[in-house]
Image 1: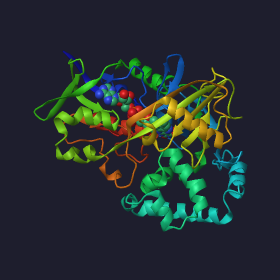
Image 2: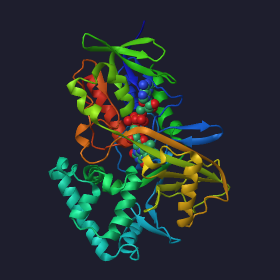
Image 3: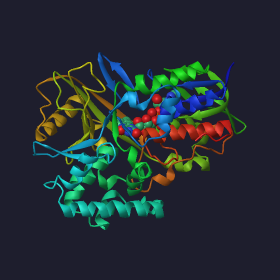
Image 4: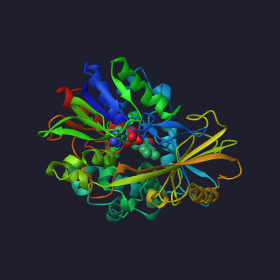
Length: 447
Ligand SMILES: Cc1cc2nc3c(=O)[nH]c(=O)nc-3n(C[C@H](O)[C@H](O)[C@H](O)COP(=O)(O)OP(=O)(O)OC[C@H]3O[C@@H](n4cnc5c(N)ncnc54)[C@H](O)[C@@H]3O)c2cc1C
């Protein structure tokens, strides 16, 4: 009979963080991952000769816990990201980009220039209405975040009479670019809440594109550190359900029907995965009823290789009023082995989920034409990567359904970006949830 102190289900950042923190305390840890690669939504792999990833990610300069976890396994964030102090907004029908500085400390001139310039896109009135919108949103979040969850970003914009221009060229790019959703489907709580933790650390603000595939630079170093502490990582292994005896969790049952026992099980799967693991034993348990009601939402990305770079620099670009939420050239940062590499995240994701890759390619190429980008002539390879149920819904009235890491079931702990923590569905949020799960297992504070 195989037995561990702790089984962690899922090798995303939440599961790996929990596994690392727990194994550091001398406990025997088994991490079980159903996929063949580590990293969950922060993974990269070779798909029939093309290196693809779960989707292009940006490391936000004010992420703290994620940087600390990486530091612990010998990875300095500055060595694995290419920092950007600016973002571009590319407007349909205009063959040019508006450039906005986002980093008051690392790129003060660009930040001032971006705020004072770009007047043909955002007039002084548009900018003033944006300042009022954000100030009110942040204050509202501090006073009553749950009330804010009843409104969408578009409702909030209407309430504060945000100008149409500001909505189109600032809020739509931000809402689609960050969580792939149009403002009418995006909870105002999630929208303002995501920026808020950055305010006390505004001096750290900039965004980083990774210098390599995420499985190699994020997941593998953490997994190796777990192994160095005698932990075991098993990929290609799916957990079917929990082993529950007399109301206590005793371990897990694998798909191939093997039982593995443990003193604690940390379910660090994505929301749909966690529901599937828990459903036989707890779908009617009142403590899990909110979690079972919390809907999931998809994400769809297309990753394209070209005979030469499409953009003159690797920078996050928002493209409002198109089906592309955001895009980034990556051939000088993440995927330097190819001459041109563009990664695009699509919006709204549900529209693309049932489509064939060729159909998606055509839509993206058409949008590219309207954005002044030729995504046809030099195309050498492409892949569509879909995440049908990987996110929890960020739509209004859903945030209160997110569960805590602690459950009333003895020896069962949850982790994952959908569990309650202040960074919503982000890498930092996943890491914090993993630390909170480890605290519950270890019975001591580590955050
Ligand atoms: C396209 C895209 C772009 C993103 N951009 C950003 C960004 O720019 N910045 C940012 O901070 N965040 C971004 N995110 C969000 C970020 O990736 C996630 O918030 C974070 O990675 C979630 O980690 P997690 O560990 O909670 O879940 P996951 O990474 O989903 O890990 C869960 C793991 O559990 C495994 N699993 C599920 N069921 C089972 C089972 N039965 N048995 C065994 N294993 C199981 C899964 O295979 C998976 O590996 C993005 C996500 C996507 C998809």
